[in-house]
Length: 194
Image 1 (tube, rainbow, N blue to C red):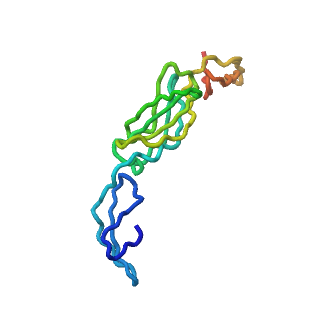
Image 2 (tube, rainbow, N blue to C red):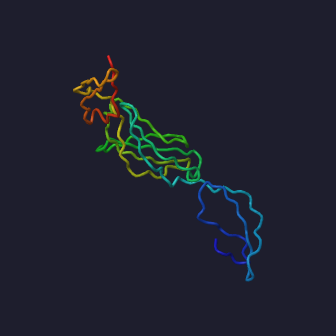
Image 3 (cartoon, rainbow, N blue to C red):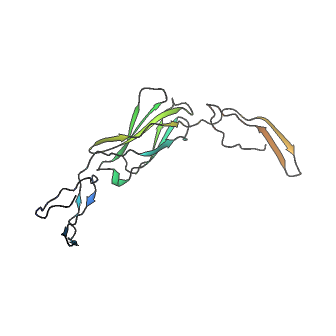
């Protein structure tokens, strides 16, 4: 608070964070200067409030077939604003109007996995992650696009051929599998000898 009149013995401190412990000291001042501070008051925790900060870095992807993996940066304890803190995950297929809602009742959580056999590989989803505590639901993050898990490649590489390089080496070549919506990204190939 601003400087309080010398005849006043009480002040209201504002702009504190909810559900945080504080201690206070009082300092007397006059035209000569500022005196020694009082001993600290007892610790006092402010009342809880609805969380005001949404999780950040919403992303995800990967996972197995028929999975949607959603990840986020957890909200630090000092911004949880009360007990009973958890996360609200909302997602829908891109272009859909209906949101699916899930709750993760864990302070440390940073990931949610939705499994459903009807999810096609590499399907885009709109995702939002919010927060709640015993006081109510807080804000939601902005929408992020997250893709469902990929399926294993359904076609084999074509044009495999082998060329003898030496008595102990053979060079094997093939046509790469083109990226498409159903095979996803090919991260590597395995060459097997028969």
